[in-house]
Image (cartoon, rainbow, N blue to C red; front, side, top):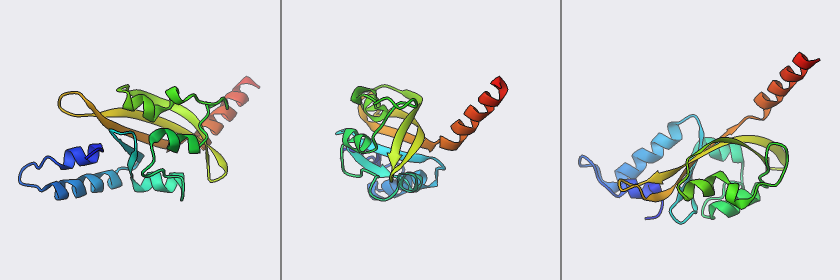
Amino acid sequence: MGSPFEVLAARPRGGISAADAHHVLAAALEAVGEAIVVCGRDGRVTHLNRHARELLGAGCDGRGTDAATWMRALQPRTASGLALPAEDLPPLRALAGEVVQCVDVLVTLCGRETLLEVCARPASDARGRTRGAIVTLRDVTEPRREEALRRAAVRA
């Protein structure tokens, strides 16, 4: 039982079995309109919802690997293209207990550069202990490009 999913599902509530609670949580994640990645306490990627799987593409979802390896495979960089140090990777910061407000991270997805807005927060238990991390991803490549074009047009 390492992922926040498993921790929540292991505590039956209102007569719901752990297995049923797990399925309800999985369904809730699938219903959310954001790309969500769940990391367990050990730092391994344990769940990606449909939006995350579609955004990341085949072979890039990282399920079962540790968050650092998964992120490194995406070749993360700052929005300006500088290498992003491991200690600045949002999932690792969340696993260390930090709430990461959305930051832009340039990654390579299936051979193309994509600018992602990445938010991450620790998944904590009732005692405040970090049990994993919840990461949201949003492709902001086009909106940021359009924003830059608008700013350039205003300056011209």
